[in-house]
Length: 229
Image (spheres, rainbow, N blue to C red):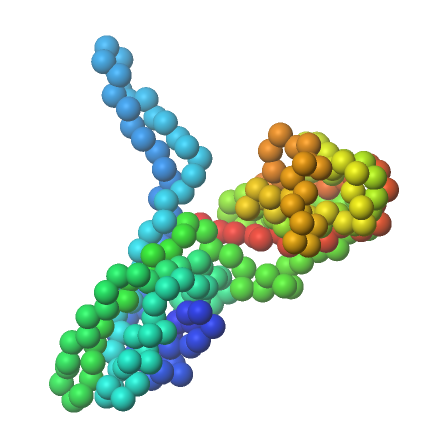
């Protein structure tokens, strides 16, 4: 029997039956084909980004005693894990209406449409965390570059180097965190964007990534946020 986890709850706990396993979908790359008068063929404009998509799940449940609870749960945004890829977590939302139809033998059927953001992440995010005390090389085993969360522990002016690209940090006091996904630099609840001198934010390419630094650094903690298409 198929199943899914959404917002920390399991469909099996609600007695939900899935008629068919959800599709495995790869996000569509945003590419525009532009026709230029007088030029043969098309000009391909590739943004290097990916579009969200919809995963449909056909469900049914026997009886209606907990139907209101089910419909209240299947609303809003949260993490989604599907039985077809139990080691991956997706960022999904349900905002469309859900229509429930009566079937024979007191079964109710309904179609869920999860709007899913383009990347899949590791279910074992905590187990993927890294702590470095010396320069090293790490491997991104995902299928697309990741946007990590990096906390540098140290003092003074520090330069973090990833694959030869410098990410300067000025006047660090004990620690500073770089969130590449949110494009923010902070310490606890305090904004530290003014201490960051990088042109872009760090990212880990697919395959090997070399990490080193200069300055007074005691350790670096990394949540790599490996991801897949």
